[in-house]
Length: 152
Image (cartoon, rainbow, N blue to C red):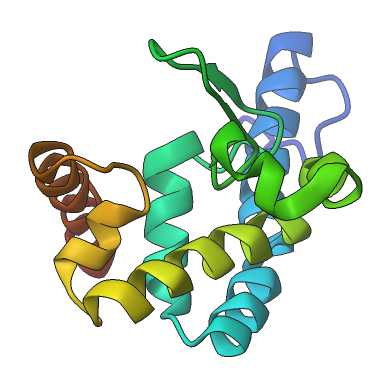
């Protein structure tokens, strides 16, 4: 009869590495959960919507950096665009590496969109784009993310 080993001692190094990566990914999603709640409450937007935007934008990668065709750059969990540098100022901009702060800035941006368009999908699209077509495409991506998450 084979004995089942308890614990990971003696496990293959690849298994240990894989398990470590999985645990870090799970923990990082939970680690920032309170940030979405706090930011949503502060800026009057749904924490679930903020979560879906972070999933859509960076797949919860707090160090994500994306270079856009127009020369702008997006940073962090919420992929805050360099367009906002002037409005945030240098000191605040430099804090975008803090994942929780990044979520708060994303919530602030989304809150401005909600003030402009109401609590609509157009406001969600405003988070990412200016043109009507880009807003619609983006809002649909976020909607699909929300829908997939609701199914779990």
